Length: 141
Image (tube, rainbow, N blue to C red; front, side, top):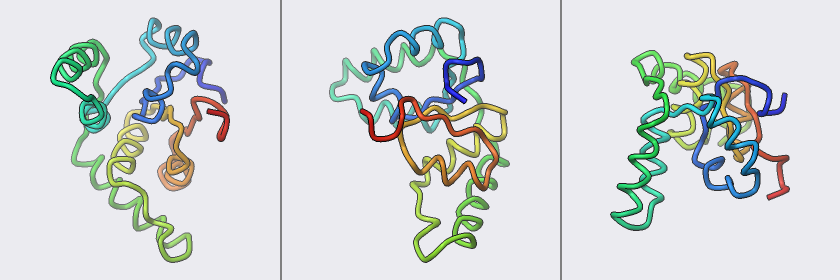
């Protein structure tokens, strides 16, 4: 499924970082209220801001998005995903950034897709059951 078709999209930092590569589709999804955020994605984006003014501006913009909550169940599911990934693959297969596991578990819990440009989400979707949607075809931007 392409990301332009209607699902709620929990956008990872990797998608936000590449907005310039698909501005029309991004703005359409944003205007339709389909881009959502969770606290971990919000923190990742704030971390990436370079100046205090950038942090303040970004924080204000992100406050306009619907924030889906991270629950105790989200954290349990993220930990379980790491264990399940380790059981499925060779040594190191479970190694995904903890923030990606939490974002993925949050999306799964709330029935959202994850919009990203990061292969970790494909692996996580296999154990958490959310829809992993590449913002652009892998390797194109």
